[in-house]
Length: 227
Image 1 (cartoon, helix red, strand yellow):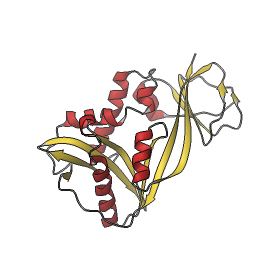
Image 2 (cartoon, helix red, strand yellow):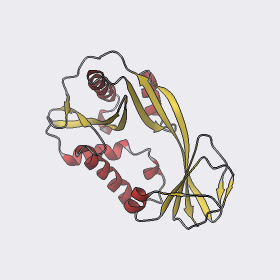
Image 3 (cartoon, rainbow, N blue to C red):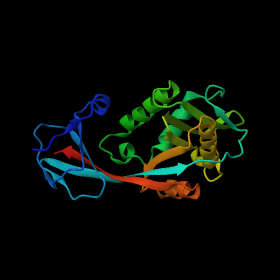
Image 4 (cartoon, rainbow, N blue to C red):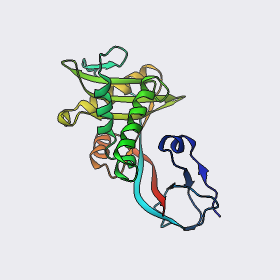
């Protein structure tokens, strides 16, 4: 029988019993207790099966990283959320855009409503500084066209969400937002930035590679729902 780590936050939020298995040492897994959903996470793509469960979704999560050492030109359209007059609904809609390639959107068993609630909560928890140190927004004519969230832990920081309005993509706004985070971190004496995304999100991966980020970690995540 395989030990499963129960994920309290996920279980409470989605109102189902969710567990997690990391790097299983066998390809055929039998569970001791019942879960509605299992996240199976492994460094390589393993052909695992869980008795009584069906694999509904697979993604490859990649973590980009870069050592940052030089400041970029500050863009005049970027503000900390505390200085900006951003409508909360604009931030929510941008968050949905940022999550369109996420497993919570692409695995349709979660449903659109729960996907949106998940990202609304992420924004709320970023604004109240539980999930983020700050939210930087890009504005033109009082309209919020993009934002980025980040959180620092000791000697590195991680991007939480980054999004650009679908009509404004391809204009370099995302790059300016990442530059602004790098500048803030250098000022704070932090010189390493990590950015998670999905390998399947080829646009995002190409964008980070152009910004000289390299993949430092790969995790294959599979969803197994109880039959």
